[in-house]
Length: 452
Ligand SMILES: Cc1ncc(COP(=O)(O)O)c(C=O)c1O
Figure 1 (cartoon, rainbow, N blue to C red):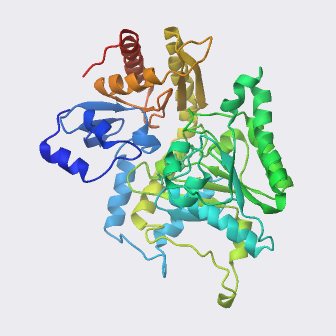
Figure 2 (cartoon, rainbow, N blue to C red):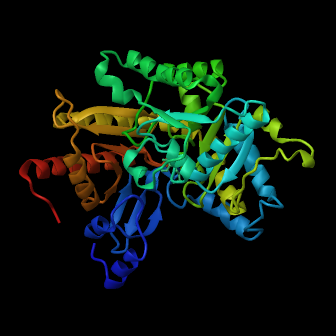
Figure 3 (cartoon, protein in one colour):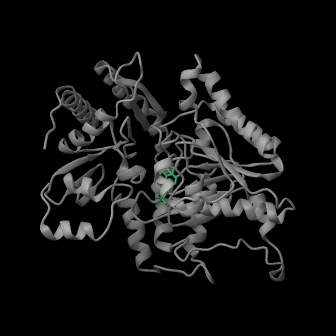
């Protein structure tokens, strides 16, 4: 893609998320149009979007039902002020999201994205403990490799070193444990590794003093770190630990929500109900910014009382519960429920997994991980030593784009999560593109060549 001088100038007037502008300019991706499973760039080149933008276009780009719902709402009202009012459609969205959330997670506050939802959950839990007589509980435990967002609380909960150190000192009261994948080489058995990994949370709670620990926050399937997929037992152990020490279990389902894993939420896929779910990304299929904090209804009662008690949640965002975004969110949920797209994610996932397993023929794949259609492939130099292969991932970034394929590559693993509108023939097309791109990347790395 050749950019004009003006486009280059404009790119220097902004920045790309978490990447150097010079690297982007060397291989830019300026997109113009999207529909279903495809993007088109400004030169008219088509890309297969294997990752829904970035785990966002859960039903594909510009899904007609979602677009129609937003168009309808455009003619009614586009903004309601959360400080002194609420849109009727926002209340309907709250009801709908609660109806598909697990257990008694019925207390819903819509936001404009993932970081807002996580930030809100952290504050909600701290205030909850203050108002229930346990004000010394304030610490959160999360995992290395986890990513929960860019704001200060969400960043402090994140375990991605390079995304954090430039902004130190971090907020206090955030502790970390290792995810199971970081411990697996010390165990011969994956299940045993997961048991150990889960029990780390208890070790930290005990050593910190349970009276000071407020919450545990994890992504059920961790994206950063390579689609880290613990066992079901891991979550059952976490639930038990949190119950025994009176600690809130928060699932960051910003990536894993809305059908991808084979259920509306990964909480249902893994059979563990947390106290709070944070949502974002695919909740509006990318049509408008939308996130949500979904908490246990009984927690909310501690924020209700006479006005002079001042026990309301001391938190707010101007665009929270935006009517247009809520219209999009309702259409997404309806589409998933009415068309059994969770079942479809399971079916397609089986098929896609077998296609990705085929890549093992190249001798550089350690593992295919994930649930449903949220899948990741770990790249290694040699399947006997399992040494990570970032050079291959970096080459794959180039070959995939050249071949018109968009995935998440980071760089010793890559992830796919095609939109739920995909059919088997689409997965065949996607798998062929991945195979071709990986083969070419491997050739480039072994011969030291680089395509333009
Ligand atoms: C697991 C997870 N949590 C939180 C966030 C933050 O969401 P947002 O970028 O919408 O603020 C992200 C974004 O990538 C994420 O992947």
